[in-house]
Amino acid sequence: MNAGDVLRAKGNALYTVAPDSSLWSAVQTMTEFDIGSVVVMDHGRLAGMLTFREVFRALRANDGRVGKGMVREYMEPDPTIVQAQTDVNDLRRLMLDRRVRYIPVLDEKALAGVISFHDVARAVLEEQGYENRMLKDYIRDWPQSESVSG
Image (cartoon, rainbow, N blue to C red; front, top):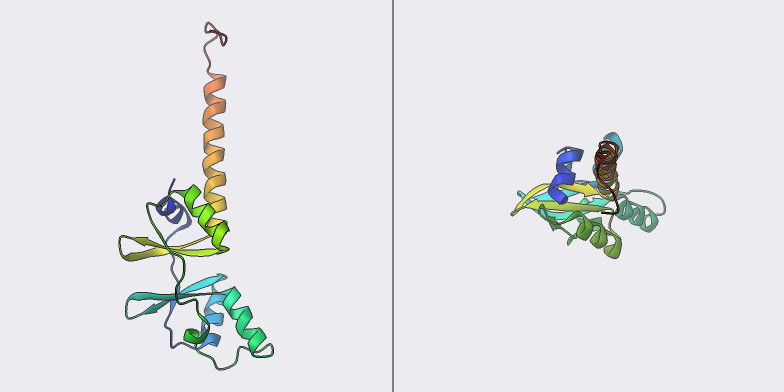
């Protein structure tokens, strides 16, 4: 399983904002769609990521208010990214090591979507469940005449 497989399993909804959008409008988008991040796009290219972590930093800097700041002021301008072919185990390690919960996925040079740590956990759990069912079915159909010891 790779990052592209995880993305296909979760769906391809992608929420973006411009760097010159207000932080408040980005927060409204995040709450309206119950998402933890938005991709910051500038003229068709990935310019950064805004997650609830950056929003909390803005709240702290503004005494608990979002203020009139722009996304550009608070976004992560150089987010960790992966290619669609990145193996899911490498993806999990990268997310843990860099402490990122959301990671953009590129297919070649085009943005294919964003994967959350939750998306990865769900995909791995579903894959393991499928493998477990297959193994149980295989064991259940084990021919009686064959010996395990050889």
